[in-house]
Amino acid sequence: RDQDLADLLNQQVDAAQGRGDVTAAVKLLVRLGEVYERKLNEPESAIDTFRRVVDLDARHRPSIEALARLYRQADRLEEAAEVMEKLLDASEPQDLVRRAEELAELYVKLDQGENACRALERVLDSGQAKPDLLARLEKLYEQQANWSRLAELLVRQADTAGPADDKAKLLSRAAKLY
Image 1 (cartoon, rainbow, N blue to C red):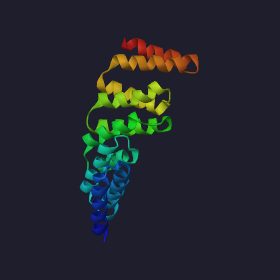
Image 2 (cartoon, rainbow, N blue to C red):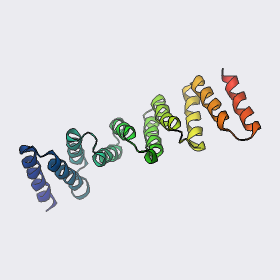
Image 3 (cartoon, rainbow, N blue to C red):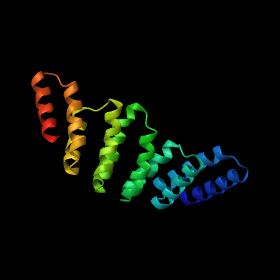
């Protein structure tokens, strides 16, 4: 029965595309992708379907999110990172931190520390970095032996640090790196 639904949706997608109705094709493809993923347990077919949506509408966020999720579940981390980059680029301010952290985590798993740093720096540049994110970025810079970026981060933290002792400690650490 679910396979019949998938077949019917495929026919409707073909008809919508045949008449040039991209909006209808996108809606039908999203539904088809959901059927493949949730009802038929065919993640590869779901991936192919959501990629077709993105081919028609490159900014279709639910399909990009579905691709990121499906790639992670399939342990296709390079492809997941590529899709997560698109999500990060299109993120609203309230989603930026979460998406950047997810992307950084993927890059760490892929042993791409420089890309992980770049993802977290997006949050830093937006002014939304919290202490835990700063600590994570600090650790990544140390692992990458990126001493100049670490020193810049410490100076930046010193600029917003509270007590004079905290500022002095941060600036002292930065000075030792230069």
